[in-house]
Every structure is written in C-alpha cells, then in structure tokens.
Length: 322
Image 1 (cartoon, rainbow, N blue to C red):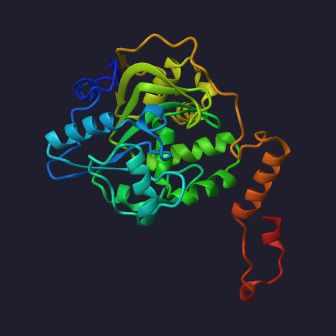
Image 2 (cartoon, rainbow, N blue to C red):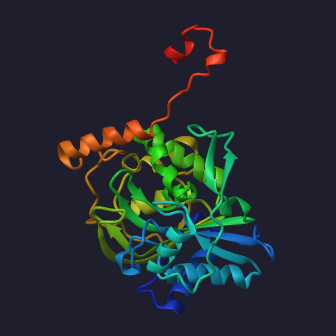
Image 3 (cartoon, rainbow, N blue to C red):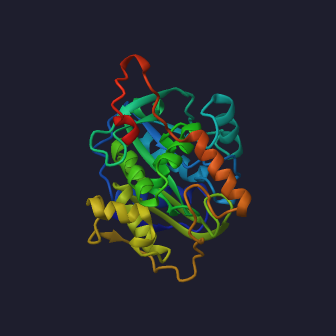
C-alpha cells in the first residue's frame, strides 16, 4: 500500500472517473475498515450553491464513483456537508440541487451533537453535524482549491464542514491567528478520523479560491488513508512548500504527516498554479476601511465572552485578570 496515490482522469465521464477512483483507492486501502451493512458518511465539499463546472464543490461524478465503491463492498453511503449558512433542510437541499447531487443518496439529518476532542490542541470539544458522528465510518471527498485565508483547501480543511454552518464564523473569530486556526482544523480532522480521503482534482480551482477563483483542468484523482498526508502531496503538486500552507505545516509539526511518505503516480509539480495573496482569517484588508469596520463589528458580535454569575461572585478579581 502507498500513503498517497494519484491517477490520471482527463474528464468527468462517469466510467473514467470510477476507474480512476477505484484504482487510486485500491493503492491506499484494503477496505478492512468497511464491513457489509455499515453506514458510511461521504463528506463532500459543498461550500455553497455552485454549479459543478465552477470547480468550487466536489463534482457529482466523483461522489457517485465513491458511493459505488462503498456499495460494491456492502456499505451504505450517505452524501452530505454543512455549507455556509444555516444547517437546515431548506438551505442544504438548495445547495444539493445547485451542486447537481439529486441522484445521490443524500443526508437528511440536520441535527447537531457536541463531541469531545480530548487530544485536541486548540479544541477539546466542538459542535458537530450529527450525521457524521452517527455513521460507522467517514470518507472525506474533497476538492483541490486555493483558499484566500489558508492558501490551500483540500482534505484537512474539508473536514471544517463538520461544524454546523452558522457556527463556523464563531471559530474564525475565536481563533484569529492562522496557526491557531490551522491547529483547530487539524483537531477536527483528527477527531473525526476519516478512514479514506479522495480528492477531486479533475478540475481544480486556482486564484481567488475557495469560491471566486478560476476552474483549471488538472486531470487527476488522488487518494490516501490520511487527509494530512494527502494535503502534503497536493501542496507539492501546486508548487507550495509546507510552510506556506498552515494546515500542512501543523500536520508535519504534530507528526500527522511525513515528508517520507510513499506516493504512487506523483505528478510533475505545476509551475504556474495561481496562488492568492495571503489574507486574514476575518478578511481584514479586504474591502478597505469598510471591510475593516465590518470585521470589527462581526468580531464584536461573534466573539465569546464570560458571563458573571452574581450569586457565586466573591469579588476576587480573578476573572477580570483572565
């Protein structure tokens, strides 16, 4: 078995996509984790209501291929995500429709669950979309895209979609430093521990990602049992050193990925993949003075604050110091 596998896939024709996915996945897992009858959550990147050709979301052909592989081994795949916006049936169904997923088995459970993350560095617990925690296994099916805040979004960043939609901004405002936010993303991915990560890089997004960049035909499917290891290889592919991608830097620091990982079919690095100018987690510096004011106002609304329990207060001043 390899740590990461890349396979050529020139377009989204269904059988070509299936063969590329089957071949790549077969080089990184023996499916020992998948038993007949298991429910497998197929975590897509459905960041917003975008048409598949925009390359902002995981293409339905790739999701269909992953579902087919799972079904062939007796599993029951369920596709879903928590896009930006409320995690409700009305909102998410609209995204499903726009992303062309109507023919796939889709998640209809919009409940939430708080889960413990005892080994977390920045998050020891977090609110999660319950459909992921109720599944017997998670398969992470991401999209290769640039990201205006985190430089690159692929396997690890895709698991941020486990956070219910409107609660995502809260984490952004709690963790304003990029390194801290990357550490939280690593906590979420490690806690949910996807058994397999597949990347749709048939069409990737360069430039002002994750939603406003340009689609670029890169013609690849990639897979790994480790989202962390996959992201390291994908960063190399688009010409980025680990220190330029906060999540990759964090995964190497923690030992979640290794520079010595084995790679099958590693493609030549792209020399001209357009990387966005680095921006802040709160979009500071975007939109001039108005953008800065918007960030401050949102920060005031979303930042966490302690509340005094008057009956227990002994006026020691300790909470003020904290």
